[in-house]
Length: 297
Image (cartoon, rainbow, N blue to C red; front, side, top):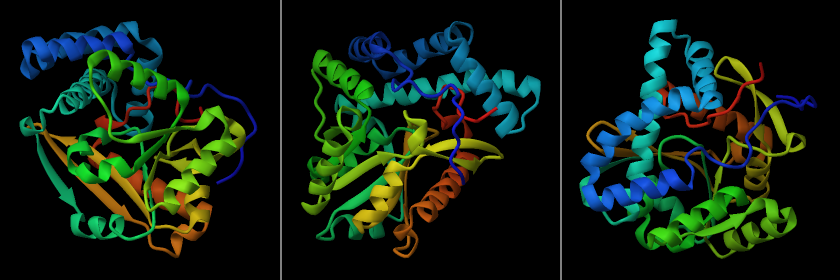
């Protein structure tokens, strides 16, 4: 891994799926139910292919270069990729509306994960923009109030507005990182000292100066150093956490504990994360939700 000074197109700080899209499905689920929302999604997914050209190009290149698919298969995967993303969006809204009974949940390494988060000290959880991490809200239950999600303010404000307008609440706390780096670091440190959980996504950055170029899925891509540096210096347990959608409205929670010796060095921790994410995407390739030029061309 090495620092890279050249500028390229990168994530803007806002996730795909705007305010209107969220509220549209909130009201659809309330008025017509989950089945109707999935049926409407079949049309919405077609719409995005021509009318979201930047995202479509990003998915196309991901399927062609990283997955090595042929032209015809990649055309089909464009639709399936958008549809899968829409499913997780609808599921997120439904779960926030208290419809946990409509889904099934399964866990990997469940007992060990509980042991880690029940220890007196804090825990760093690192995920990615894959699957639907919020599907775990019902599972976390009493743990939810101890979760601190570190995210960019552009996402933070959008989520707050949508929750307010739809009458939904989130138990977890938000630490916006781009309102002041020092303030955010102190909040994270205080939360960990209180025995709480600091949750990061390790696959997006805003400032190239704080990113490293890494080998990832057969190409070169930049990843933020911050989450891994904090995890390394705070000397707390580090867990990679993913919530992935499977058939039949089932979610599988995957928890991967990082050995203490590996979590002491930033680059070693980043390497473990990259290999973990590669393994995950080999299993769930359509749940990669970075809709912008992720790899350095």
